[in-house]
Image (cartoon, rainbow, N blue to C red; front, side, top):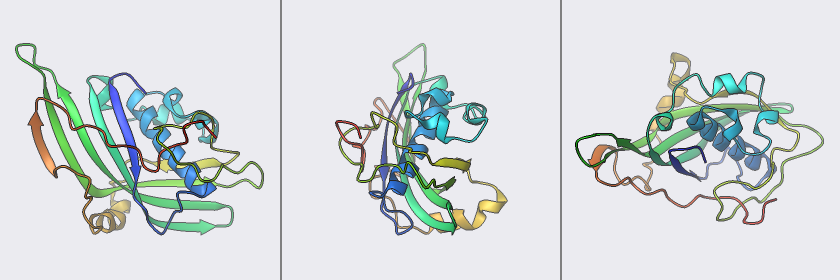
Length: 213
């Protein structure tokens, strides 16, 4: 876990992706790794095998936007829900909708710390495109209480394109589709509030096995 960060990931079922398949393992591991690498501002914070599964320039990509946790404490739970997919031979492109419980520590030298707490609804599309290999498929049925896998779960598959922040004009239809999803029941609130303590992280789901792969 990068410094200043306490996070967990929860995946909400959708017909575009089976979380217990090898494909589900790969997508979950890559998306979670990218989140950690972005927060830590280095690809080295991804899960084992993340760099090898990534396109060239991954370390530069995770640094394109400065993360909140690079300067202050962050506590969050990140949610992903599959929206749609496009398959072409051994290559697949998935669109995921992102939601978040985010608490950012505000620093005031003259008084006690205060937390800015943000409940983000669906509406933040993320795109992952990857190519499957005939040999070395990711393992199936990866679930448990751990927040991260102990070993590489990427197999020999590779990501060819990744967009963590799909908010451009070309993403408009997916933004609308994500916004149209039912409300995320795990959000304590939608919008912004402040408090003396962060919203706590929720348990990972489906999580990762306690004893590795």
